Image 1 (cartoon, rainbow, N blue to C red):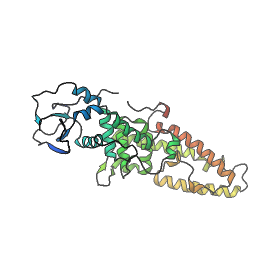
Image 2 (image 1 turned 90 degrees about the vertical axis):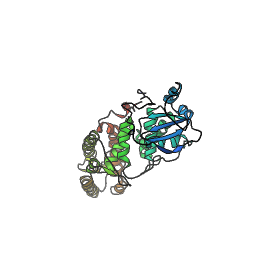
Image 3 (image 1 turned 60 degrees about the vertical axis):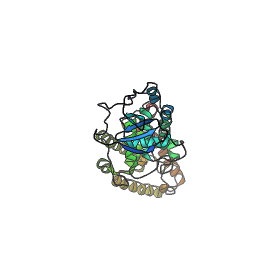
Image 4 (image 1 turned 180 degrees about the vertical axis):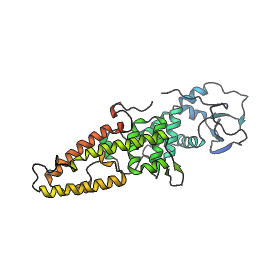
Length: 326
């Protein structure tokens, strides 16, 4: 794993502490038998060092060193300062003091806190729980992707969550989830909306970095280019009419109708679902059996290819070479 940033006991230049004149605030996590005060920003948490040491090798190693007795204390407990946000620590401590429940859906903010702090302080239970949820919702396997429902189940679904998720996986190096989260962003939002910022239900706005915006713009262009090639059978006779077709004129007309709908919809919305999506239900029954079978086989081959290339559309290696940052 990468070098782990040290836990701060004293304020240092890189710890970004609260303003020295800011009065520390007691958090709701204040254990009566806690033996240390963890301070993030201006918020203090009274907790048990053995709980941190049990879950985090970083804290376990730190607590092997005797804490200085001349440091300031709160209710007789020495203060350990960390450089993370108070919100992340509040969310993580809530989880650490309650049993993990893998079947329960967690809010995005909790998953993000578990992943950030779990990686930074080597808390495997938190890190792995968060990663398992991300990998479940955004798998690297097409069959697993097809089996998912239309909404998130391991992470609480809400408006604006996909740009948040994209920011998180870039930040924490969960590269194997970038292609499918990026695809979801381009499916759910226009490029203009992604560039300007997507609004959360409570009114705040999630913004993407300039590099991420550029990656999405390039990915959209690549997806649309591939998609036009994959849908080429709608504009020529290579697949339809099939040699066994008994209703050639009717199937050619139906093919043109499908093509008109796809072309209009793609132009209006930049819909990229045809690149890796399954055969649309709305196309079923519009062609004769021989033509539909041939078209379905062609579509399936194309989507397999689209899935194989999906990471490369986002500037990443193909699936077999795409690894998360340890």
